[in-house]
Image (tube, rainbow, N blue to C red):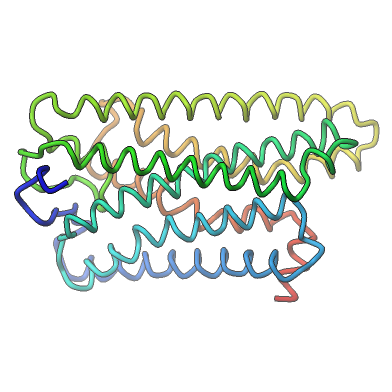
Length: 302
């Protein structure tokens, strides 16, 4: 990694030039961060402490909250520190750590959302086999596979990115380090290996997306066959929060990285990045607890 660059820091994108606006952005990020800490912390505590929530669905939800806490903590505290110190700098190792952690945590979250879609499919479409297919050992293995695969993916992307020679300066057009912005600083065609790795990861991600879609096609088909309205309502209530979280996660990332160039502008890119990197970890606990009586009761006890 030492051959990648002759500088020891990167300069991140500034939200504002005036001190007043910097402090305003600090206050906004602080509020969002505290809300994410509170929401995910309460959810983790509720699931861990209430024995009624020791089920596969809540086990995966606990893992999701841990990943959400990690992802927002990778970005927001550094941004707040820069607002306060009126600086744009991030160290070379700090930038590499951000890229690794974001690939690890966001990739793990996407893998976990895929596993949670399978959990809902088994619960609704194959309820008689749920205890066998979603036993404790099976759930632990699936969660471990999600964490391990995202870790391997993060290592590959981080090492590959920082082995690329950088010769276009050290200014990153984003308020945190991300691979596409680092690749813009690379020399000639040396970035193509990382682009190939990104395409491969995107194909795997698309495969997970197709799996989620097919799972929900089967789920909705099964739910619509339930004769009682109360039964349909109960089945939908266990699926809609997960579907909302998946939609929020996937749609913001797709819009951030696949929007037409004609829609691109520095201000819009900044807003979209905040939407996919900061907003989902804050909203996910609210989405899951909004229509979940068991979780609401557990949260009240906490």
